[in-house]
Image (cartoon, rainbow, N blue to C red; front, side, top):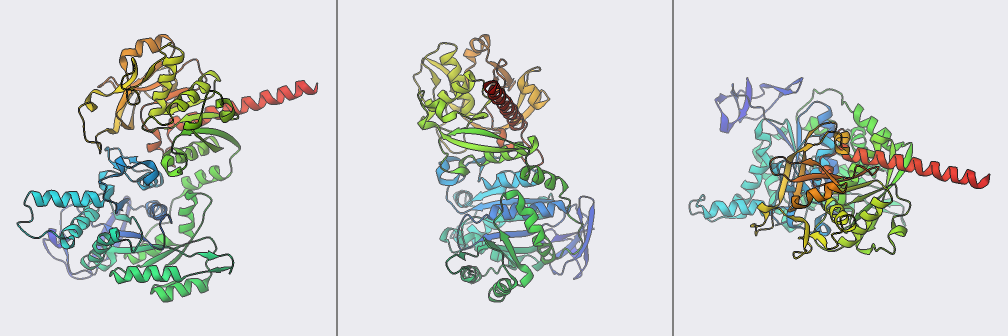
Length: 594
Protein backbone atom coordinates (compact mmCIF):
# COMPACT_ATOMS: atom_id res chain seq x y z
CA UNK A 1 0.00 0.00 0.00
CA UNK A 2 1.23 3.49 -0.85
CA UNK A 3 0.21 6.98 0.19
CA UNK A 4 -1.52 9.58 -1.96
CA UNK A 5 -2.61 13.20 -1.62
CA UNK A 6 -6.31 14.11 -1.38
CA UNK A 7 -6.81 14.50 -5.15
CA UNK A 8 -6.18 10.76 -5.54
CA UNK A 9 -7.77 9.61 -2.28
CA UNK A 10 -9.41 6.26 -1.68
CA UNK A 11 -9.93 6.38 2.07
CA UNK A 12 -8.51 8.55 4.84
CA UNK A 13 -5.35 7.31 6.39
CA UNK A 14 -4.89 7.58 10.17
CA UNK A 15 -2.50 10.31 11.22
CA UNK A 16 1.09 9.10 11.54
CA UNK A 17 0.87 5.95 9.40
CA UNK A 18 4.33 4.83 8.15
CA UNK A 19 5.13 5.06 4.45
CA UNK A 20 7.36 2.61 2.64
CA UNK A 21 9.32 4.74 0.20
CA UNK A 22 11.38 2.93 -2.40
CA UNK A 23 14.67 4.47 -3.49
CA UNK A 24 16.09 1.92 -5.93
CA UNK A 25 17.14 -0.94 -3.65
CA UNK A 26 16.51 1.04 -0.46
CA UNK A 27 13.20 0.99 1.44
CA UNK A 28 12.97 3.81 3.91
CA UNK A 29 10.10 3.64 6.42
CA UNK A 30 9.03 7.13 7.44
CA UNK A 31 6.15 8.75 9.31
CA UNK A 32 4.05 11.47 7.76
CA UNK A 33 1.84 13.65 9.96
CA UNK A 34 -0.41 15.24 7.33
CA UNK A 35 -4.17 14.74 7.62
CA UNK A 36 -4.51 14.89 3.84
CA UNK A 37 -2.83 11.54 3.07
CA UNK A 38 -4.76 8.49 1.87
CA UNK A 39 -4.24 4.80 1.18
CA UNK A 40 -4.36 3.37 -2.34
CA UNK A 41 -3.10 0.41 -4.35
CA UNK A 42 -2.05 2.64 -7.28
CA UNK A 43 1.71 2.69 -8.07
CA UNK A 44 2.42 6.28 -6.95
CA UNK A 45 5.04 7.50 -4.50
CA UNK A 46 5.02 11.06 -3.21
CA UNK A 47 8.01 13.26 -3.97
CA UNK A 48 9.52 15.81 -1.63
CA UNK A 49 10.59 19.31 -2.67
CA UNK A 50 13.64 21.46 -1.99
CA UNK A 51 13.64 25.11 -3.12
CA UNK A 52 16.92 27.00 -3.53
CA UNK A 53 16.74 30.80 -3.41
CA UNK A 54 19.47 33.44 -3.52
CA UNK A 55 20.09 36.73 -1.78
CA UNK A 56 22.42 39.75 -1.55
CA UNK A 57 23.82 39.37 -5.06
CA UNK A 58 23.50 37.24 -8.18
CA UNK A 59 26.12 34.77 -9.48
CA UNK A 60 26.72 33.23 -6.06
CA UNK A 61 26.35 29.73 -7.48
CA UNK A 62 22.78 28.59 -6.73
CA UNK A 63 23.03 26.16 -9.63
CA UNK A 64 26.21 24.57 -8.28
CA UNK A 65 24.81 24.32 -4.75
CA UNK A 66 21.59 22.77 -6.12
CA UNK A 67 23.55 20.32 -8.30
CA UNK A 68 25.90 19.44 -5.42
CA UNK A 69 23.00 18.76 -3.06
CA UNK A 70 21.32 16.66 -5.73
CA UNK A 71 24.54 14.68 -6.27
CA UNK A 72 24.83 13.91 -2.56
CA UNK A 73 21.20 12.78 -2.35
CA UNK A 74 21.63 10.70 -5.51
CA UNK A 75 24.76 9.09 -4.04
CA UNK A 76 22.61 7.94 -1.10
CA UNK A 77 20.20 6.10 -3.40
CA UNK A 78 17.47 8.69 -3.96
CA UNK A 79 16.03 9.46 -7.39
CA UNK A 80 16.64 13.18 -7.77
CA UNK A 81 16.05 15.79 -10.44
CA UNK A 82 16.59 19.56 -10.55
CA UNK A 83 14.58 22.26 -12.30
CA UNK A 84 15.33 25.94 -12.92
CA UNK A 85 12.80 28.77 -12.74
CA UNK A 86 14.04 31.86 -14.58
CA UNK A 87 12.31 35.22 -14.01
CA UNK A 88 12.91 36.74 -17.45
CA UNK A 89 10.05 37.19 -19.93
CA UNK A 90 11.78 35.42 -22.83
CA UNK A 91 9.97 32.13 -23.40
CA UNK A 92 13.38 30.46 -23.45
CA UNK A 93 17.01 31.63 -23.85
CA UNK A 94 17.12 30.48 -27.49
CA UNK A 95 16.99 34.02 -28.89
CA UNK A 96 19.31 35.56 -26.28
CA UNK A 97 22.77 36.77 -27.22
CA UNK A 98 25.42 34.78 -25.29
CA UNK A 99 26.67 38.07 -23.85
CA UNK A 100 23.26 38.43 -22.19
CA UNK A 101 22.86 35.08 -20.49
CA UNK A 102 25.75 32.79 -21.37
CA UNK A 103 25.34 29.71 -23.53
CA UNK A 104 22.00 28.21 -24.48
CA UNK A 105 21.91 24.62 -23.28
CA UNK A 106 19.94 22.13 -25.40
CA UNK A 107 18.37 19.00 -23.90
CA UNK A 108 17.73 15.61 -25.49
CA UNK A 109 14.12 16.54 -26.31
CA UNK A 110 15.19 19.77 -28.04
CA UNK A 111 14.45 22.33 -25.34
CA UNK A 112 16.60 25.47 -25.38
CA UNK A 113 17.32 26.07 -21.71
CA UNK A 114 19.42 27.88 -19.13
CA UNK A 115 23.08 26.89 -18.82
CA UNK A 116 22.47 25.68 -15.24
CA UNK A 117 20.78 22.60 -16.72
CA UNK A 118 24.21 21.71 -18.07
CA UNK A 119 25.53 21.68 -14.50
CA UNK A 120 22.60 19.49 -13.44
CA UNK A 121 23.34 16.92 -16.13
CA UNK A 122 27.11 17.00 -15.64
CA UNK A 123 26.76 16.37 -11.89
CA UNK A 124 23.93 13.83 -11.94
CA UNK A 125 24.80 12.06 -15.20
CA UNK A 126 21.08 12.03 -16.05
CA UNK A 127 19.21 13.89 -18.78
CA UNK A 128 16.92 16.84 -18.20
CA UNK A 129 14.02 17.93 -20.40
CA UNK A 130 11.68 20.78 -21.31
CA UNK A 131 10.01 20.38 -17.91
CA UNK A 132 13.26 21.18 -16.08
CA UNK A 133 13.45 24.83 -17.21
CA UNK A 134 10.56 27.27 -16.80
CA UNK A 135 10.59 31.01 -17.48
CA UNK A 136 8.20 33.82 -16.64
CA UNK A 137 7.58 34.09 -20.38
CA UNK A 138 6.47 30.47 -20.61
CA UNK A 139 4.23 30.83 -17.55
CA UNK A 140 2.48 33.91 -18.93
CA UNK A 141 2.25 32.36 -22.41
CA UNK A 142 0.44 29.33 -20.96
CA UNK A 143 -1.96 31.42 -18.85
CA UNK A 144 -2.75 33.83 -21.70
CA UNK A 145 -3.41 30.92 -24.08
CA UNK A 146 -5.84 29.47 -21.54
CA UNK A 147 -7.54 32.85 -21.17
CA UNK A 148 -7.95 33.14 -24.94
CA UNK A 149 -9.43 29.66 -25.02
CA UNK A 150 -11.98 30.62 -22.36
CA UNK A 151 -10.63 28.23 -19.74
CA UNK A 152 -11.17 30.68 -16.89
CA UNK A 153 -14.92 31.00 -17.54
CA UNK A 154 -15.02 34.78 -17.58
CA UNK A 155 -12.99 35.35 -14.42
CA UNK A 156 -10.51 38.20 -14.08
CA UNK A 157 -7.07 36.68 -14.74
CA UNK A 158 -4.58 37.80 -12.07
CA UNK A 159 -1.06 37.14 -10.85
CA UNK A 160 -2.60 35.53 -7.77
CA UNK A 161 -4.05 32.97 -8.17
CA UNK A 162 -3.69 32.26 -11.90
CA UNK A 163 0.01 32.95 -12.50
CA UNK A 164 1.04 31.45 -9.17
CA UNK A 165 -1.18 28.40 -9.79
CA UNK A 166 0.62 27.76 -13.09
CA UNK A 167 4.00 28.18 -11.37
CA UNK A 168 2.96 25.68 -8.69
CA UNK A 169 1.73 23.24 -11.32
CA UNK A 170 5.14 23.36 -12.98
CA UNK A 171 6.95 23.03 -9.65
CA UNK A 172 5.01 19.85 -8.80
CA UNK A 173 4.94 18.38 -12.32
CA UNK A 174 8.14 16.33 -12.11
CA UNK A 175 7.32 15.17 -8.60
CA UNK A 176 3.90 13.88 -9.67
CA UNK A 177 5.45 11.76 -12.44
CA UNK A 178 6.40 9.09 -9.92
CA UNK A 179 9.95 9.02 -11.32
CA UNK A 180 11.60 10.99 -8.52
CA UNK A 181 11.82 10.91 -4.75
CA UNK A 182 13.15 14.45 -4.39
CA UNK A 183 12.74 17.44 -6.73
CA UNK A 184 15.08 20.41 -6.28
CA UNK A 185 13.89 23.73 -7.74
CA UNK A 186 16.35 26.57 -8.22
CA UNK A 187 14.72 30.02 -8.34
CA UNK A 188 16.65 32.39 -10.59
CA UNK A 189 17.39 35.97 -9.64
CA UNK A 190 17.79 37.45 -6.18
CA UNK A 191 15.29 37.88 -3.36
CA UNK A 192 13.90 41.41 -3.66
CA UNK A 193 13.77 41.42 -7.47
CA UNK A 194 10.33 42.45 -8.70
CA UNK A 195 10.25 39.76 -11.38
CA UNK A 196 10.98 36.99 -8.82
CA UNK A 197 8.02 37.78 -6.54
CA UNK A 198 5.46 35.42 -8.19
CA UNK A 199 7.88 32.49 -7.80
CA UNK A 200 8.51 33.30 -4.14
CA UNK A 201 4.74 33.59 -3.59
CA UNK A 202 4.25 30.17 -5.21
CA UNK A 203 6.77 28.67 -2.80
CA UNK A 204 4.96 30.33 0.13
CA UNK A 205 1.69 28.75 -0.95
CA UNK A 206 3.28 25.31 -1.36
CA UNK A 207 4.78 25.55 2.13
CA UNK A 208 1.21 26.05 3.39
CA UNK A 209 -0.49 23.47 1.11
CA UNK A 210 1.94 20.53 1.37
CA UNK A 211 2.82 18.56 4.51
CA UNK A 212 5.42 20.35 6.61
CA UNK A 213 8.08 17.68 6.06
CA UNK A 214 7.61 17.68 2.28
CA UNK A 215 9.12 21.14 1.65
CA UNK A 216 12.53 22.60 2.51
CA UNK A 217 13.80 26.07 1.55
CA UNK A 218 17.57 26.55 1.17
CA UNK A 219 18.69 30.19 0.96
CA UNK A 220 22.11 30.95 -0.54
CA UNK A 221 23.60 34.23 0.56
CA UNK A 222 26.90 36.11 0.76
CA UNK A 223 29.09 36.78 3.80
CA UNK A 224 31.46 39.50 2.50
CA UNK A 225 34.96 39.81 3.92
CA UNK A 226 36.19 43.37 4.45
CA UNK A 227 39.94 43.13 4.07
CA UNK A 228 40.62 46.59 5.51
CA UNK A 229 38.78 45.66 8.72
CA UNK A 230 39.69 41.95 8.48
CA UNK A 231 36.10 41.05 9.31
CA UNK A 232 33.33 38.89 7.94
CA UNK A 233 30.04 40.80 7.83
CA UNK A 234 26.69 39.08 8.43
CA UNK A 235 24.44 42.11 7.99
CA UNK A 236 23.76 41.55 4.24
CA UNK A 237 22.64 38.00 5.06
CA UNK A 238 20.39 39.22 7.87
CA UNK A 239 18.74 41.73 5.54
CA UNK A 240 18.35 39.11 2.80
CA UNK A 241 16.66 36.63 5.15
CA UNK A 242 14.47 39.43 6.55
CA UNK A 243 13.38 40.37 3.02
CA UNK A 244 12.59 36.73 2.20
CA UNK A 245 10.67 36.30 5.46
CA UNK A 246 8.58 39.40 4.70
CA UNK A 247 7.21 37.54 1.65
CA UNK A 248 6.02 34.76 3.95
CA UNK A 249 8.82 32.31 3.06
CA UNK A 250 11.21 31.44 5.85
CA UNK A 251 14.40 29.56 4.98
CA UNK A 252 15.10 26.27 6.74
CA UNK A 253 18.78 26.26 5.80
CA UNK A 254 21.15 29.16 5.06
CA UNK A 255 24.15 28.44 2.85
CA UNK A 256 26.78 31.16 3.24
CA UNK A 257 29.12 31.83 0.33
CA UNK A 258 32.38 33.13 1.76
CA UNK A 259 36.05 33.71 1.01
CA UNK A 260 37.09 33.06 4.60
CA UNK A 261 36.04 30.28 7.02
CA UNK A 262 33.04 30.90 9.28
CA UNK A 263 33.82 30.37 12.96
CA UNK A 264 31.22 29.18 15.44
CA UNK A 265 30.56 32.71 16.68
CA UNK A 266 29.65 33.87 13.17
CA UNK A 267 27.41 30.83 12.62
CA UNK A 268 25.74 31.36 16.00
CA UNK A 269 25.09 35.02 15.16
CA UNK A 270 23.55 34.15 11.79
CA UNK A 271 21.41 31.45 13.38
CA UNK A 272 20.22 33.80 16.12
CA UNK A 273 19.27 36.72 13.88
CA UNK A 274 17.92 34.60 11.00
CA UNK A 275 15.89 32.25 13.20
CA UNK A 276 17.44 28.93 12.16
CA UNK A 277 19.34 26.26 14.07
CA UNK A 278 23.12 26.71 14.12
CA UNK A 279 23.59 23.36 12.36
CA UNK A 280 21.48 24.77 9.49
CA UNK A 281 24.04 27.53 8.81
CA UNK A 282 26.24 26.02 6.11
CA UNK A 283 29.67 27.32 5.12
CA UNK A 284 30.27 27.42 1.34
CA UNK A 285 33.90 28.37 0.91
CA UNK A 286 35.27 29.34 -2.50
CA UNK A 287 36.63 26.20 -4.18
CA UNK A 288 39.36 25.68 -6.77
CA UNK A 289 36.86 23.81 -8.96
CA UNK A 290 33.09 23.43 -8.92
CA UNK A 291 33.57 19.67 -8.70
CA UNK A 292 34.90 20.04 -5.13
CA UNK A 293 31.64 21.59 -3.94
CA UNK A 294 29.72 18.29 -3.39
CA UNK A 295 32.48 17.10 -1.04
CA UNK A 296 32.51 20.46 0.76
CA UNK A 297 28.74 20.24 1.20
CA UNK A 298 29.10 16.64 2.39
CA UNK A 299 31.54 17.82 5.06
CA UNK A 300 29.04 20.50 6.12
CA UNK A 301 26.25 17.84 6.18
CA UNK A 302 23.95 19.86 3.90
CA UNK A 303 22.32 16.69 2.57
CA UNK A 304 21.82 15.18 6.04
CA UNK A 305 20.20 18.36 7.37
CA UNK A 306 17.88 18.49 4.32
CA UNK A 307 16.88 14.85 4.75
CA UNK A 308 16.10 15.30 8.44
CA UNK A 309 13.97 18.34 7.70
CA UNK A 310 12.17 16.26 5.05
CA UNK A 311 11.41 13.61 7.65
CA UNK A 312 13.89 11.10 6.20
CA UNK A 313 15.85 9.63 9.10
CA UNK A 314 17.07 6.36 7.54
CA UNK A 315 19.54 6.53 4.67
CA UNK A 316 22.75 4.79 3.52
CA UNK A 317 26.23 6.28 3.35
CA UNK A 318 26.97 8.18 0.12
CA UNK A 319 28.74 6.34 -2.69
CA UNK A 320 31.08 8.94 -4.21
CA UNK A 321 34.03 6.75 -5.20
CA UNK A 322 33.86 7.53 -8.93
CA UNK A 323 33.54 11.24 -8.13
CA UNK A 324 36.62 11.13 -5.90
CA UNK A 325 38.66 9.28 -8.53
CA UNK A 326 37.72 11.93 -11.11
CA UNK A 327 38.58 14.74 -8.69
CA UNK A 328 41.93 13.13 -7.87
CA UNK A 329 42.85 12.96 -11.57
CA UNK A 330 41.66 16.53 -12.06
CA UNK A 331 43.71 17.95 -9.18
CA UNK A 332 46.87 15.94 -9.81
CA UNK A 333 47.49 15.77 -13.59
CA UNK A 334 50.67 14.20 -14.97
CA UNK A 335 51.19 16.71 -17.77
CA UNK A 336 49.66 19.74 -19.48
CA UNK A 337 48.30 20.59 -22.94
CA UNK A 338 47.42 24.01 -24.33
CA UNK A 339 44.27 24.31 -26.43
CA UNK A 340 43.31 27.36 -28.47
CA UNK A 341 39.59 28.16 -28.27
CA UNK A 342 38.72 30.22 -31.34
CA UNK A 343 35.48 32.11 -30.79
CA UNK A 344 33.83 35.50 -30.84
CA UNK A 345 32.23 35.55 -27.38
CA UNK A 346 35.43 34.88 -25.42
CA UNK A 347 34.95 37.93 -23.17
CA UNK A 348 32.24 35.95 -21.35
CA UNK A 349 33.36 32.47 -20.29
CA UNK A 350 29.77 31.31 -19.75
CA UNK A 351 29.24 31.63 -23.52
CA UNK A 352 31.28 28.42 -23.95
CA UNK A 353 30.53 26.85 -20.55
CA UNK A 354 29.80 23.31 -21.74
CA UNK A 355 32.92 23.28 -23.94
CA UNK A 356 35.13 24.38 -21.05
CA UNK A 357 33.61 21.77 -18.74
CA UNK A 358 34.07 19.09 -21.43
CA UNK A 359 37.76 19.98 -21.54
CA UNK A 360 37.92 19.37 -17.78
CA UNK A 361 36.24 15.95 -18.11
CA UNK A 362 38.46 14.94 -21.05
CA UNK A 363 41.59 16.26 -19.32
CA UNK A 364 40.92 14.11 -16.26
CA UNK A 365 40.42 11.05 -18.48
CA UNK A 366 43.81 11.72 -20.12
CA UNK A 367 45.39 12.74 -16.79
CA UNK A 368 46.44 16.11 -18.19
CA UNK A 369 45.67 19.68 -17.24
CA UNK A 370 43.95 21.44 -20.15
CA UNK A 371 45.00 25.05 -20.34
CA UNK A 372 42.58 26.94 -22.60
CA UNK A 373 43.85 29.99 -24.48
CA UNK A 374 41.02 32.19 -25.71
CA UNK A 375 41.63 33.67 -29.16
CA UNK A 376 39.15 36.19 -30.55
CA UNK A 377 38.48 35.19 -34.16
CA UNK A 378 37.71 38.78 -35.15
CA UNK A 379 41.37 39.72 -34.67
CA UNK A 380 42.99 36.80 -36.51
CA UNK A 381 44.55 37.70 -39.87
CA UNK A 382 46.87 35.90 -42.29
CA UNK A 383 49.67 38.15 -41.10
CA UNK A 384 49.34 37.40 -37.37
CA UNK A 385 47.86 33.89 -37.30
CA UNK A 386 51.17 32.16 -36.57
CA UNK A 387 51.95 34.57 -33.76
CA UNK A 388 48.49 34.12 -32.17
CA UNK A 389 48.39 30.32 -32.47
CA UNK A 390 52.03 29.51 -31.81
CA UNK A 391 52.66 27.11 -28.95
CA UNK A 392 49.24 25.43 -29.06
CA UNK A 393 48.79 21.67 -28.85
CA UNK A 394 45.31 21.70 -30.33
CA UNK A 395 42.76 24.03 -31.87
CA UNK A 396 38.99 24.09 -31.30
CA UNK A 397 36.82 26.36 -33.43
CA UNK A 398 33.69 27.08 -31.44
CA UNK A 399 30.03 27.27 -32.54
CA UNK A 400 28.20 30.55 -33.08
CA UNK A 401 26.00 32.58 -35.40
CA UNK A 402 26.47 35.56 -37.68
CA UNK A 403 29.19 37.01 -39.89
CA UNK A 404 31.44 38.64 -37.29
CA UNK A 405 34.80 36.90 -36.89
CA UNK A 406 34.15 34.33 -39.63
CA UNK A 407 37.24 35.02 -41.75
CA UNK A 408 39.45 34.72 -38.67
CA UNK A 409 38.02 31.26 -37.98
CA UNK A 410 38.69 30.17 -41.56
CA UNK A 411 42.31 31.38 -41.32
CA UNK A 412 42.75 29.48 -38.04
CA UNK A 413 41.40 26.27 -39.62
CA UNK A 414 43.86 26.62 -42.51
CA UNK A 415 46.71 27.00 -40.04
CA UNK A 416 45.71 23.82 -38.18
CA UNK A 417 45.28 21.85 -41.41
CA UNK A 418 48.60 22.86 -42.91
CA UNK A 419 50.63 22.67 -39.67
CA UNK A 420 49.17 19.24 -38.80
CA UNK A 421 47.91 20.67 -35.51
CA UNK A 422 45.09 18.64 -33.89
CA UNK A 423 41.84 20.31 -34.95
CA UNK A 424 38.27 20.01 -33.70
CA UNK A 425 35.36 22.03 -35.09
CA UNK A 426 31.89 22.13 -33.52
CA UNK A 427 28.79 23.13 -35.55
CA UNK A 428 29.89 26.43 -37.13
CA UNK A 429 33.46 25.25 -36.54
CA UNK A 430 32.83 22.25 -38.79
CA UNK A 431 31.27 24.52 -41.40
CA UNK A 432 34.33 26.79 -41.33
CA UNK A 433 36.54 23.74 -41.95
CA UNK A 434 34.41 22.88 -44.99
CA UNK A 435 34.62 26.44 -46.35
CA UNK A 436 38.39 26.59 -45.81
CA UNK A 437 38.91 23.27 -47.62
CA UNK A 438 36.63 24.36 -50.45
CA UNK A 439 38.55 27.60 -50.96
CA UNK A 440 42.13 26.43 -50.50
CA UNK A 441 42.07 22.81 -51.70
CA UNK A 442 39.17 22.57 -54.17
CA UNK A 443 39.90 26.02 -55.61
CA UNK A 444 36.39 27.35 -54.97
CA UNK A 445 37.65 30.83 -54.09
CA UNK A 446 34.21 32.20 -53.23
CA UNK A 447 33.01 29.15 -51.29
CA UNK A 448 30.92 30.23 -48.32
CA UNK A 449 27.81 29.65 -46.24
CA UNK A 450 24.55 31.24 -47.33
CA UNK A 451 24.18 32.36 -43.72
CA UNK A 452 26.98 34.87 -44.26
CA UNK A 453 26.79 35.32 -48.05
CA UNK A 454 23.35 34.52 -49.52
CA UNK A 455 24.68 35.18 -53.05
CA UNK A 456 27.81 33.04 -52.95
CA UNK A 457 28.35 31.11 -56.22
CA UNK A 458 29.56 28.09 -54.23
CA UNK A 459 27.26 27.55 -51.22
CA UNK A 460 29.14 24.63 -49.68
CA UNK A 461 27.10 25.32 -46.54
CA UNK A 462 23.41 25.92 -47.19
CA UNK A 463 20.20 26.33 -45.21
CA UNK A 464 18.38 23.09 -44.49
CA UNK A 465 15.30 22.66 -46.70
CA UNK A 466 12.86 22.44 -43.79
CA UNK A 467 14.26 25.69 -42.39
CA UNK A 468 13.70 27.80 -45.50
CA UNK A 469 9.99 28.43 -44.90
CA UNK A 470 10.36 29.25 -41.20
CA UNK A 471 9.85 32.88 -40.20
CA UNK A 472 9.77 32.70 -36.37
CA UNK A 473 13.18 32.65 -34.67
CA UNK A 474 12.49 31.08 -31.27
CA UNK A 475 12.58 27.30 -30.94
CA UNK A 476 12.57 26.65 -34.70
CA UNK A 477 16.10 25.37 -35.37
CA UNK A 478 17.00 21.71 -35.68
CA UNK A 479 17.08 20.97 -31.96
CA UNK A 480 17.70 17.98 -29.74
CA UNK A 481 19.08 14.47 -30.22
CA UNK A 482 19.32 12.92 -33.70
CA UNK A 483 20.96 9.66 -34.85
CA UNK A 484 24.19 9.46 -36.81
CA UNK A 485 25.62 6.49 -38.70
CA UNK A 486 29.43 6.29 -38.68
CA UNK A 487 31.61 4.67 -41.35
CA UNK A 488 33.87 1.90 -40.12
CA UNK A 489 37.60 2.47 -40.31
CA UNK A 490 37.32 6.25 -39.93
CA UNK A 491 38.64 8.53 -37.20
CA UNK A 492 35.05 8.98 -36.00
CA UNK A 493 34.69 5.21 -35.65
CA UNK A 494 37.92 5.00 -33.66
CA UNK A 495 36.60 7.74 -31.37
CA UNK A 496 33.15 6.27 -30.70
CA UNK A 497 33.92 2.55 -31.17
CA UNK A 498 30.46 2.08 -32.69
CA UNK A 499 28.61 2.81 -35.90
CA UNK A 500 25.40 4.23 -34.44
CA UNK A 501 25.35 7.24 -32.10
CA UNK A 502 22.96 10.04 -31.14
CA UNK A 503 24.05 13.60 -30.48
CA UNK A 504 22.32 16.93 -29.83
CA UNK A 505 21.90 19.65 -32.43
CA UNK A 506 21.20 23.37 -32.66
CA UNK A 507 21.52 24.73 -36.19
CA UNK A 508 19.76 25.87 -39.36
CA UNK A 509 22.54 25.37 -41.93
CA UNK A 510 24.16 22.17 -43.17
CA UNK A 511 26.80 20.79 -45.51
CA UNK A 512 25.61 21.02 -49.14
CA UNK A 513 25.61 17.45 -50.46
CA UNK A 514 25.91 18.74 -54.05
CA UNK A 515 29.61 19.24 -53.27
CA UNK A 516 30.22 15.99 -51.37
CA UNK A 517 31.78 14.11 -54.28
CA UNK A 518 34.23 16.96 -54.91
CA UNK A 519 35.26 17.09 -51.26
CA UNK A 520 35.75 13.35 -50.91
CA UNK A 521 37.75 13.15 -54.16
CA UNK A 522 40.26 15.60 -52.62
CA UNK A 523 40.50 13.91 -49.24
CA UNK A 524 37.85 15.39 -46.93
CA UNK A 525 35.32 12.66 -46.21
CA UNK A 526 31.89 12.51 -44.61
CA UNK A 527 32.47 9.87 -41.92
CA UNK A 528 29.08 10.36 -40.24
CA UNK A 529 25.60 10.90 -41.69
CA UNK A 530 21.98 10.94 -40.68
CA UNK A 531 20.61 8.25 -42.98
CA UNK A 532 17.02 9.53 -42.86
CA UNK A 533 17.81 13.07 -44.02
CA UNK A 534 21.17 12.60 -45.70
CA UNK A 535 22.55 15.33 -43.43
CA UNK A 536 26.33 15.18 -43.09
CA UNK A 537 27.15 15.02 -39.38
CA UNK A 538 30.93 14.50 -39.37
CA UNK A 539 33.69 15.63 -41.75
CA UNK A 540 37.31 14.56 -41.33
CA UNK A 541 40.72 14.44 -43.02
CA UNK A 542 42.21 10.90 -42.98
CA UNK A 543 45.71 12.13 -43.92
CA UNK A 544 45.88 14.48 -40.92
CA UNK A 545 46.94 13.33 -37.39
CA UNK A 546 43.62 14.59 -35.97
CA UNK A 547 41.24 16.76 -37.98
CA UNK A 548 37.52 16.41 -37.37
CA UNK A 549 34.45 18.63 -37.54
CA UNK A 550 31.01 17.73 -36.23
CA UNK A 551 27.67 19.38 -37.01
CA UNK A 552 26.28 18.48 -33.59
CA UNK A 553 27.25 19.64 -30.09
CA UNK A 554 29.03 16.80 -28.23
CA UNK A 555 29.81 19.12 -25.31
CA UNK A 556 26.14 19.02 -24.32
CA UNK A 557 26.32 15.34 -23.32
CA UNK A 558 29.65 15.34 -21.54
CA UNK A 559 29.53 14.62 -17.79
CA UNK A 560 31.91 13.69 -14.99
CA UNK A 561 31.09 9.98 -15.26
CA UNK A 562 30.58 9.96 -19.06
CA UNK A 563 32.97 12.37 -20.84
CA UNK A 564 32.23 13.12 -24.50
CA UNK A 565 34.31 10.62 -26.57
CA UNK A 566 35.32 13.17 -29.21
CA UNK A 567 36.67 15.55 -26.52
CA UNK A 568 38.59 12.70 -24.88
CA UNK A 569 40.16 11.75 -28.23
CA UNK A 570 40.92 15.37 -29.13
CA UNK A 571 42.76 15.98 -25.84
CA UNK A 572 44.49 12.62 -26.30
CA UNK A 573 45.72 13.77 -29.73
CA UNK A 574 46.86 17.10 -28.25
CA UNK A 575 48.76 15.18 -25.57
CA UNK A 576 50.58 13.12 -28.22
CA UNK A 577 51.32 16.28 -30.23
CA UNK A 578 52.74 17.94 -27.12
CA UNK A 579 54.95 14.95 -26.30
CA UNK A 580 56.32 14.75 -29.85
CA UNK A 581 56.94 18.50 -29.84
CA UNK A 582 59.00 18.23 -26.66
CA UNK A 583 60.92 15.24 -27.99
CA UNK A 584 61.76 17.25 -31.12
CA UNK A 585 62.85 20.27 -29.07
CA UNK A 586 64.99 18.09 -26.78
CA UNK A 587 66.58 16.36 -29.77
CA UNK A 588 67.27 19.70 -31.48
CA UNK A 589 68.86 21.05 -28.27
CA UNK A 590 71.06 17.96 -27.93
CA UNK A 591 72.16 18.29 -31.56
CA UNK A 592 73.02 21.93 -30.95
CA UNK A 593 75.07 21.05 -27.87
CA UNK A 594 76.94 18.34 -29.74
